[in-house]
Structure formats: C-alpha cells, structure tokens
Length: 276
Image (tube, rainbow, N blue to C red; front, top):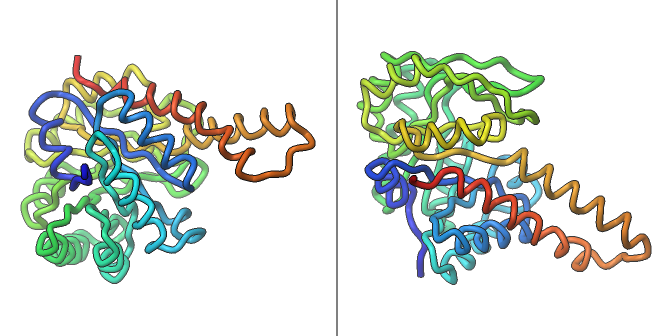
C-alpha cells in the first residue's frame, strides 16, 4: 500500500530540491496513465479531483478509484481534492478516503480565508489528512484576473492556518494553453523569505518546462498542478484514433488508446520536476 498524504510527499521534495506533479484527473484512463507514468519514473504523484471532474463523477467513486490505484502502486500516490470550496465538501472527501484536501478560500477576505482554512485544517489533521490552502488568487486564462500573493498575507496565512502546502499567485494562470507565463521571481523570493511551508503553483501548464525545472530545483515550490497540457494530449490522441478507426464504436477501445500517449506526456512532466 503506497497511499500517501500531501505532506508525506512534499516535505522530502522541499528538503531535497525537487517537486511533485499534481495531475488533474478526469476519468479512469488518465488516472491509470498517471500512476503508470509515476511508476516508470520512480516518483510520487498526486492524483487530483477538481470541480469539473466531481461534477461528472461522484466523489465516493473518485475516492475509490484513487485509493485502488494507490494501494496497488509501487510509488507514493496522493488522493487529493482540488479546489474544495466548503468545509462540507472537504469533510465528504475525508470521509470517503482522500488523503489530502485543498480548501480554496482565495476569493474570501483575508481574515475569513484564514479562519475557514484553519478550521478545515484542524478537521483534516485530526483525520490524518493533509491540507492545501490558497492565498492571493490564481486567475483564469480568458477569465477572472489574478491577484498576486502579498508576502505579508502569505506569512500570516501560513502561520495562522497550519496548512501543509500553500498555493500562491506569482504570474501563474489556470487553463493557459501556451507555456509563456511570466513568473514574478521577486515576489516568489519575498514569499519564500517569510515561510517554510511548501509552495504550490496552480496553472502549471502555462509555465515552460525549463522554468518548472528551475523552480523545482531552486525554490520552495514543491507542487505543480498540471491539467490543460494533458487534456490537450488526450484530445489529440482521441481525435487521431477516431480518424484512423472511423468504424470503431467501442468506447473502451477508443479510450484505452489514449493511455499510452498520456503516460508518455505525464512522464515528461514528472521528469522535469525531479532533482538534478
């Protein structure tokens, strides 16, 4: 059994100068491909159930799937709730066997974000589960604009909530389809100077692979959330299969054909985050 909490995989990364991939799962095929990729690279992996995935598939089903894969894996696998927006949602994830939850209070006033995150952290830790919080606001490509993380707010947030990981906004953007995000290194260094909590960058697909490598090896960023670029791989693979096999109608055959390309793409993501 190699199920792990977020803290169990991020603390070694923080000490040893690498980062762990938080891979956004939308179904069985990609979840299986991501674990296969992690095993091939000999690296831990974080399977993430985001809001879109949870709308399509009930949380108890996702929990069972993640735990099944983690218990059979040869590397640490974290079953992570991504962007939980309420204590009830986080509690449901914990009750169903997730080993890590993210509470996203980034749209709340600072004091309320701290208070709600701290309460959920207490609940999570009592159950032996890790928690990630967010300070500042990571915006969306062609959507809501980002609000950069203020170092003083980050210091307060880390100290007063007890989170195991802290998502920050330093130029990273959700759902970006081109890898040209400009990371504000000065802001990142200022945040690093006031906390030892492992840092998380959402919107990792928008950050160039070479920059992700530099961040993993030279900063306290220990987790990169990667979704868009892997969804692009899935879509391209599925379209190619449909074009090559126009008479095929078996969804299992069609979807299974995406696993090898997804495994290859996920291996590349994981490799860029490993220690030198």
